Structure formats: structure tokens, C-alpha cells
Length: 384
Image (cartoon, rainbow, N blue to C red; front, side, top):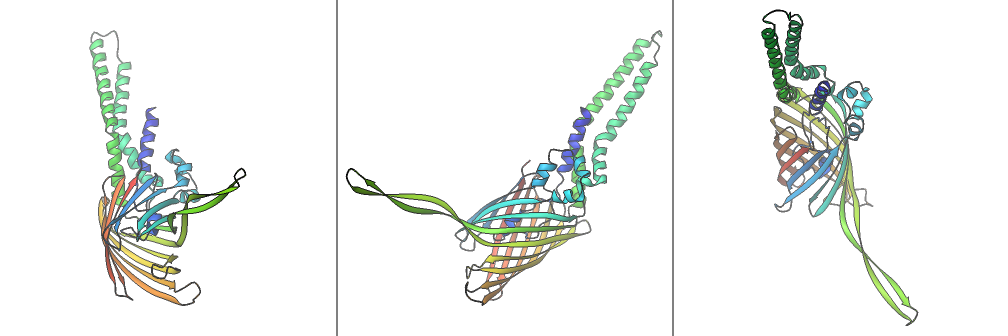
């Protein structure tokens, strides 16, 4: 039973090793209401909820949003199983276990937005659940001190077996050995009480050393708007007795969804030493133009330079959007727009389950010369 409890504690600690808690792909599609578009790799082993607050382009009222994210393959195949099942899984299953699905909503510019997204990891430099060095560090945090005490108890038990009951001091020697064994058992109990803290320290040390690990992710998202509409219809009923007609008017509520585009993007990062990470992203998609209201093509690319550590870090991100918006659905002419975005922000790991991301986004339209500054904040929370 103690061995099973120990394995359970190790599995729980190994599964709770997230290098980061980034915003979901759905949030990345929701009008870019994330402080950093280029997200770090995350091994999401639980449901996650994201909250965002941004200032809209019209006025200064806050526009909150919410998203939910989960990894269905991980939940079905590995969540309740021991970590050993993941370690012996095929590379294909390990990759599929990183597939995450998310859905999110937001309200901005007098519209209700809905987005869903999917993300899968194609490469990760470090996988905690499959890293022998990490598993050994967790086992050392639970076994080393306990094993020493158990060896001493074994020696004391052997000494008891060698005692001669015919000797005068037999009772005193037996009592002393029993006291020593009881003392060792009490020490083992004390060590076990401190195991969770030592396991947490080993886990935090691993994250500290690998928070900026290299990765490559592939993501897809779709963006829609929705609104509640009322539809009225009438029905005429005839009364045979009076030959009079009565017209009844009914109102039916329905939800109207409108496709506003999609996006597919590739993102990745590389560590520079233990404190710096450089990452980038390229995305292609289609999106409704805020000017012409037509669906046009969008190509985006950017780079992110991040400095810090596991608990907190700061970043500078540069992004470029090139939009090609049709002037009308019957015209072959396009309105070309180029937007340049510069963001200064950071991440603060409030606890092992909660991360606060913040930033100040500066957007410049080089055709119109308009400069827009927008504060952004996300709270990302693992639901453990």
C-alpha cells in the first residue's frame, strides 16, 4: 500500500510539470486579445480556463473574454493511468496526447465573437514524463532517506534475533533495540510527511532548468460572430361556428452564426542559455475585414524575445500583418493593408496552477498612419 501511495505521488508530481500556462489557440483567434501571440510550449494535463481583459478600440470600457481548453487524447488514454503507460507509449501516441482543443468567446467592437482552435506539438526538447533524469530526481526525493532508515531497522532486527534470552541483561538489551526500532519508524514517518514538499522542490527545480525548452507547435483556429435574433411568424385560425378568422403572432428566438475566417499557424522557440528564449510564428488565414466587411487573406509573421525564469519573465514581441481585403464580392480589386505591432509585456507564475500574462500592444497602420495603443491582460488557470 505504501509503495502504491509512493508511485501515486510520483505520477501526480510528474503530470503536474508544466513549463508554462499559455493562452489557448481559441484566444489567439479572438481579435488577438492575448499579450503574446507567440505562445510557449505547454504540457496541458488538466482542463484550463482563460480569462482576458482588453480595452476596445472604441472608448475605454473593458471587454472580458473566456476560453476553455483540454487535451481529449490525454484525458481518455493517460489521465487516470500511471505515468508508466505514457513512457512505454509509441511516439505517435505521445504526439497525439498533446492535441488540445479550445473554445472561447469575447465581446468587442459591438460584436459577440466565438472561436475554436486546435493545437498539436510536433517537437519538444524536454518531455518531463519521459525524462529518466527527472523521474530519478523524484524517486530520490522519496527513497534515499527512507532506505537508509530501513537498512538500519534491518540491522537492529538482526541484532534482536541474535540475543540470548538466557543472559541477565536480555530484557534491557531487547528493550533498547525495540526503542531504537521505534525511533527509526518515527523518523521514517517524519520523512514521509515531508515527501510532498521534497517532491515539489524537485519538480520546481526541473521546471526552472527547462522553462525555455525548444518546441514546435502546429495550430488551427476558426473565428465566428454570433447574435441572438428574434423571428416572428403568424398563423391564421378559422372558427367554424362564427366563420371568423383569428391571426396569432409567434416569436421564436434563434442564434445566428456568421463565419469570419480561419487561421493556421506554425510556432516554435529555441533557448539561449538558461534565461533567454527566442521564438517565432508564421500564420496564414482568411478574416473579415473591419473596413470592407469582406473575407480577405491575412499573412502574419513575428518574433518574440523573452528573458527571465520559471516564476516570472519579460518579453518584447514584433509582429507584421499583411491583409488583402476584397473591395466587394463581385470585384477583383483588393484593399492592401499592412499593420506593424510591437508589444512589451511579461508572465508572472502566481502559483503552479495560475499564470498572469500582461502587455502593452502598439499597432501602426502604415497606410493610414493610425497608431493604436492597447493594454492586454490574461489570467490562465489549470483546473486541478
